[in-house]
Image 1: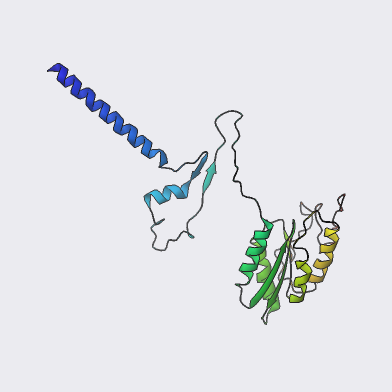
Image 2 (image 1 turned 90 degrees about the vertical axis):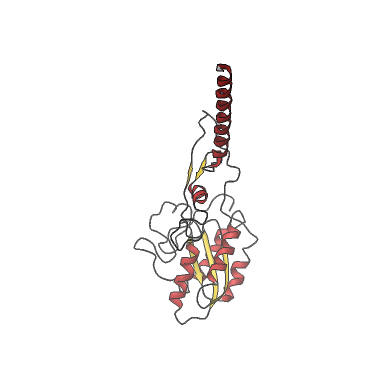
Length: 228
């Protein structure tokens, strides 16, 4: 009798251990942790498939939060092979698409260099200054904050920036050619001053990258690296 009871208890313990292990294996995805990344949105989707149930929820409304940790193994570096990088062609494409959604803006050409954005557009508007401000701020919303944006509402200048499309920052005399084009664009409305410390094009007095580029408003000269 005792042997039967012990055998039954042992079998039950094994079954419970198996269930616990199965549950633990299934719970490995509770937080959908991938490597050293914990994504809160993944947790949310497990409990609320439609997001936060506030009555007006879409994927565009969800907040994003991601936390990264170094490997606990000393000397082990995280391999981020899929680290995103800034693609100037895609940025130019996005700026042009977004600007065509603005009221009265019909045609947009955008050039994104290593430090400037040049936008030439054709618009049917009675308030050129307001439209210029909208175009400029749209471009600024896409690129890193150290970029300067120059615009012109003269479609004839589209050819001027189109010629730079196949060049890069290492092209011969590229800075001088860009400077000449920007000087012509500055003759057109540039919108409002961004802030007390920034002019219409996002140039700041004594900004940290003054030694890297030229500020057309305060006269900071552009450096001339060797080989340019």
